[in-house]
Image (tube, rainbow, N blue to C red; front, side, top):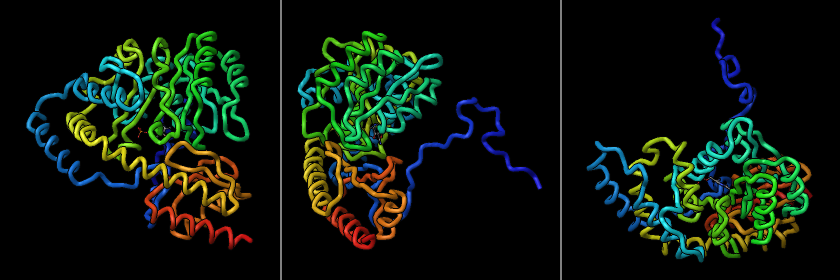
Amino acid sequence: MTHETRIDDLPIRDELRGKSPYGAPQLDVPVRLNTNENPYPLPEPLVARIAERVAEAARHLNRYPDRDAVELRTELARYLTRTAGHEVGMRQVWAANGSNEVLQQLLQTFGGPSRTAIGFEPSYSMHALISRGTGTGWISGPRRDDFTIDVEAAERAIAEHRPNVVFVCSPNNPTGTAVGAETVLRLYEAAQAAGPSLVVLDEAYGEFSHGPSLLPLIEGRPNLVVSRTMSKAFGAAGLRLGYLAADAAVVDAVQLVRLPYHLSAVTQATALAALEHTDTLLGYVEQLKAERDRLVTELRAMGCEVTDSDANFVQFGRFEDSPAAWRAILDHGVLVRDNGVPGWLRVTAGTPQENDAFLDAVRAVLKESK
Ligand code: PMP
């Protein structure tokens, strides 16, 4: 019998040996509330507009796309200026295939071999994984038991490790916790004193926050980057469009590592169509925020502990055995996420019907466990 080659038989980089890829289970169950997607399909008029713009782009697919995505960056800058309370120009915006690629380009530029990045965990697991993928050393910084950032402890960690990149995720995935401007400013100062280093404020869920975006903080702070995505608020996870806003010099810097023509003409056309329908899409965001708040209230009324959430998901618990609770909820036809935070699970706000199904499932599971 021939031996089946495994990853570790290959001459791969040592730091990748024995590791697993990122992977939320993609199971076929009636109610899927596990990957923080927007439950609302794009409205039909927008679907028609995408078809129109993509058809136009298709007429030129023999050519490479606009390498600098100028029209798209101009519209993204306009969107940020209108919604985030701060005037942003095209030269301060950069776009890539999902904010994961934005983060990867930032780490390729500001991290890399012999450099390190820090995040305050539990947080978005891809910050650590993209660091590893780019050869950047990862430092796990602390959070309090209530999942807020202990600023003094974070300042000490930054001073001690002198990381080249500091990740602040707000609202934080998987806990839903937002940070205030004061916290970001103190971490920025600590990072400049220890580095200077780049501070990446990951606002993938920014539009769902009760408070305003912290984007205005980029003014006069060239080492602060705000990362955003169209995967959540724009309901376009399948599009793969993420972007950043920062000093124009940061945008110039990431161009040193981006692949030429990384953003396809089809992607640019689709994103531009979606941006034409911003108001409709932001209307869905308002509905989801109300549903998120309802999930918090109803879970608490059932006796669950719930972390305050500014995102489109809610962290709830506490379970003695969270993998078993995850399985029990799945047995009731609802897929939520076990992010490996002991005692806690995470549910994405879905449609009112999906959320009702989820709440019924949790109610049933709590009753069964009595
Ligand atoms: N940042 C955070 C905090 C996220 O939760 C996610 C998606 N789950 C991303 C970035 C990446 O999203 P995308 O690549 O779809 O823009």
